[in-house]
Image 1 (tube, helix red, strand yellow):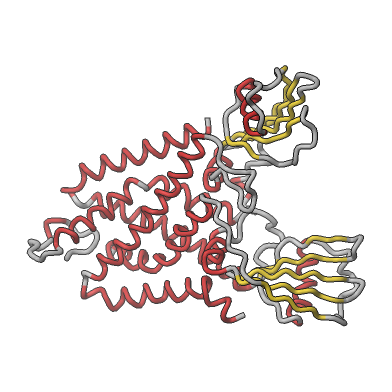
Image 2: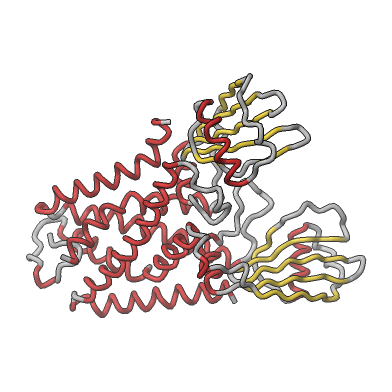
Amino acid sequence: MPSATEPLAEAKPATRPWAGLERWNRKLHFYAGLFLLFFLWLFALSGLFLNHPAWTFHEHWKNRKETSYERPITTPRPDAIEDLEQARDIMSQLGIEGDILWTTPRTDSDLLDFQVRRPGHFFFIKANWRQGSASVRHAEVNAWGVMKFLHVFSGNVADDARNHRDWALTYLWAYSMDAVAAGLIFMVLSSVYMWLQLPPKRRLGAIVLGAGCLSCGLFCLGLRWLF
Amino acid sequence: MTRDLHLYVGLFISPFVLVFSVSVFFFVHAWTPSMAPETTRVVASLDLPTDLATLSGRPLVDALKPLLGRLNIRGEIGFVQKRMQEQTLLIPVSIPGRAISVQLHLGRREANIVTRETGLADALMTLHKSPGGHGPDIRMNWLAMKAWRWFADATVYLTLFITISGVYLWAMLRAERRVGLVLLCAGTVTFFGIAYAVSH
């Protein structure tokens, strides 16, 4: 079995029953890698930026552009009873799209405060039906901000049942993240399978993989045992 | 040479890539750890630094570390909440897979320590988001988590290396160029298409 990347011309004719699996495993390894290339670069680089907030070149929030405005709004449709439906009604009147984030509990049925977010754009909306108007603060961030927000954009907030995905494109991006994660898991498993087909590289590979497992296992499991 | 480096570097970072990949499902689907049983202990007659009530940020974390050490609590100290009316500090301390909450009563010089084993899935999530972008002045106050940051950074750099070396090695495979190119273009269009749609 050739290594993951040996030219096909070097491969010996496959005669074993598992040869087809080995060939397809190898092909799918780099097909998946090529398809996911930009996704991997996005998540790798944005992860690095998120871990280094002190690096100033990727600062996005301080460099945001803000605009504020007020728009007249009408009372929500009679069938819009829930907060989410009323917020969607306001968004439709204001021409705003994105995922809703609830930040404050509602105390007055004539008022509704919420945020709408999508990568690059943050809308802070205060609707007041008594006055028939909504004030909107719109913050637009730079490309670094878009990258970092894409890294964490799932629409869900842990331990907060009120905040969940409510925009179709959030679902699309969230499932894309699932697909990238599944693709990465496949690539890891396929690479281990390919390595096992290379007897001359098994020993060094086992040492390297063992070092990786040991160091990673220390953090995942070992710290709890040690401390 | 490139092929061997691609293989060995890939093998080394495999477990780290699995940590980041598997935890994605927990984040995307808002999984929360099951409420494991708590163990509680109370330690009284503590010898507290006199300036705890006035400190904040990193100096507060640095002042708390020796005290927590004496209480046999190790881990990364999170954002400390001050409840001045009650003369209480709420100190979250975490080890991947374990959450410790210390309620420190400054007036009574007493600590109420609640420990909860949150399990492997929570450990993966903690590692995935560490150190993270919030509270950079207090983050990485425990050596183990400092070391994790080095590994997390190294995973990124090595991932960039294996993606670039992978593209180079694929480009050497003449027979696979056409299909590979189609998939590379399809992936590029998909990525930029979705990213554009969600951000505009």
